[in-house]
Length: 328
Image 1 (cartoon, rainbow, N blue to C red):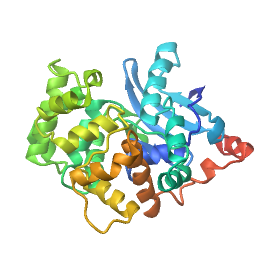
Image 2 (image 1 turned 45 degrees about the horizontal axis):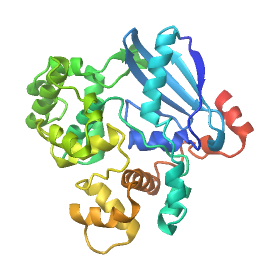
Image 3 (image 1 turned 120 degrees about the vertical axis):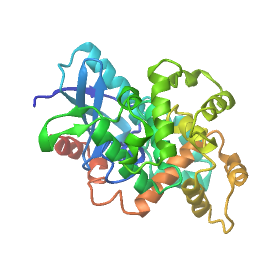
Image 4 (image 1 turned 90 degrees about the vertical axis):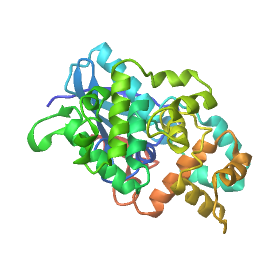
């Protein structure tokens, strides 16, 4: 299948490998795919689905991304949709200069920021996608949650390609609105989660709920609106502020994994509760969400996810090596 290509220039510094790992969270996530060099995802555009393949072809301080698009001619509208989606998913327009300046005056945070320099805060493609992710992962391990999401995408996400080569987009509201809770039980989702997901999908498709419109609301009002939805509590609401709306000052304080990451990083003996998280993060406001992402990446690195897949190869400092890798 032929692919048309164009270049994007993220606000530097930028590392595709670190950002993609923070977006996908686990090795086997089937929606956001990564082979150590190329990031791939199916996007269901108005003109039909496309598959994008993104390669970094210049080093972090002068980053360039080569974007290959398959499935539709690269007309202006398609290019605009793809660019907008990638800017959101990969945080390409986010300028972290102020964060790096702040971190440089804090030994602990400075070491973390320098270690993962080039990481950009990713966002789900839509707030709806973020909500379904959060609901699937409630009260279970992230590894199991990712497997449930894979099953959901395989069954109800827009397909791209045929046979064994087929890959799938993340399900859109219209894909799930026609289902009921019982339909989702086969994927391992509880009755309660299935009902919450299908009700959310119908509310969006019927125009009764504008999740993207939450971007216009301050944090307390956005959280209150979200908590009115079935299956959404404080953790899910704050998770969506960070990963769905891109509010990098938000650290989801009810996230047990994130709390443990924070406690290990600070070498605290005591467990942290919601208020304890707020207290220890006060010194790093308004960058709590960036601390969240950097600590997530730290745990992924400790678990070995960042090694053995070319993460260093795709982040090397030699520009000729970047180009050589990209052309291989």
